[in-house]
Length: 269
Image 1 (cartoon, helix red, strand yellow):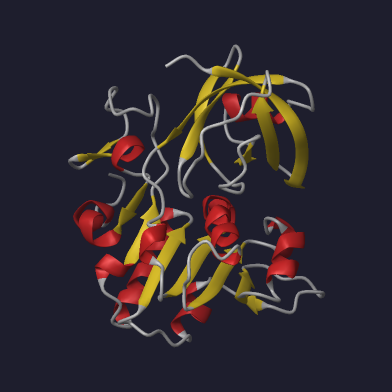
Image 2 (cartoon, rainbow, N blue to C red; image 1 turned 135 degrees about the vertical axis):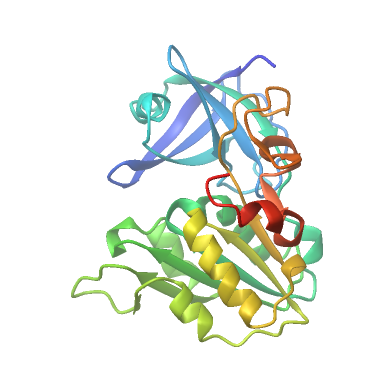
């Protein structure tokens, strides 16, 4: 699959080393609709390509939005792009969040660090009324207040979403929780028969969140997590992202915990 040429429409800095690109087709062509949780392969000319989650609104067919952390040569090259610059795009790929299962449910969105980016389209969709969940809560943890993604949106969402924000290292102006996000998560009440959890963040963070949630009695099948790692071809042909019997790029990146529990609990697999 040959990358299509895209142009950077807007670029914004989230914090040092993390940025968001709003891109559109070079010729302005309408784009395929994506599902929350899917990803694109972004190609930096002369360097290669990397899988990056969608982090914009699903109904937007004029462009795609990607939030990227600089880590390696390809993302360093993408970081140097400015408005009007070109890049290659393949996608959308993968299996996304099960939005068809949220109707009538209490939805818990649990994110750590950059993990809010793949979950942002879920929040957009639920706030738009596209799905009729019973309630929506966000638990979001970051290292420092300055390293929280989408600060302006977090403030605006607070009027519509019950939020719990936590940081590892606070400053004098911080009024939220301090410590890992599992602390506030452990203290919240959950209707285990009517709750669905969407979880994304560092694997160690997800592991402890799952322990907290299942310890409350939440079934494995009610927990969905995004495993965005080791993807190269995005179509399941190269085998680079094989994880047990599954391919993260094709069968994921979103899985229900019950179906991958055996593999998830093997560290470094």
